[in-house]
Length: 322
Image (cartoon, rainbow, N blue to C red; front, side):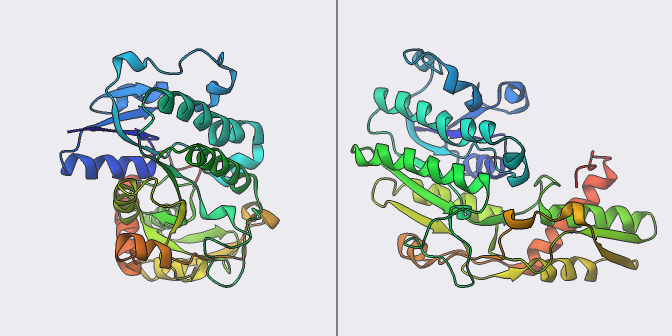
């Protein structure tokens, strides 16, 4: 059975993807940040994409001789939190553009038939009210989106040279275990903390933004299915095709609280022009590729996030960045 290589295996989506692979008894190799190597079970290799730009061009970024031949690569590793990209554009470019470029060069030079699924983002689009299809104008409003768009160009360059490389553009996804810096787990964990102390005020940013969410497990399943098709399509969105306001998510969380919570807008949580009004994807191409596109089960996601938040607060997890 071939070995699937997975960058960003120590991340949120990567963790869910590893669970799926284990359930399928599919061998895989985790490529993670060097400091996280001993935190991941199974075959694991350290890889810091931010360091690859400075590597000598003839020096291999991995000890390929000691690694199993990849039956495919799903490239998840990225600097994916938009505010972090705004704070350090150079680091975002190194991780999201030049790092995967060097990695792909070396993998495909050794194994030219290796299929690669390059994970980009719905943030490459110019936001607008209607669902965004793959032919839409690409005009990112933040550094994260700009670097992901440039990374797409890298991936498609290898495809143009005859390699089996395809790009997928996931929109928002969430689920248990997501970092509390992201909006839905931030709401859930802070509300549970307030509930535990008997109530209080939840400070929020913009609530009228509309987003297209999926459960991370459905996203991970789609990655595996799309990898099998790598090279047969250029790119596609990975989304539900339906927009939901951040206000609706917050209302759902508040309905699950047993104490009175006040909501207050905090200017420090507003991102200004970097925060798109509406970012909803058109999933028709995804449905054509997979036979059926995934849908969000809204209430199940909120229930899961609240349950996860209760567990994280009870365990004393450091949630100060929520």
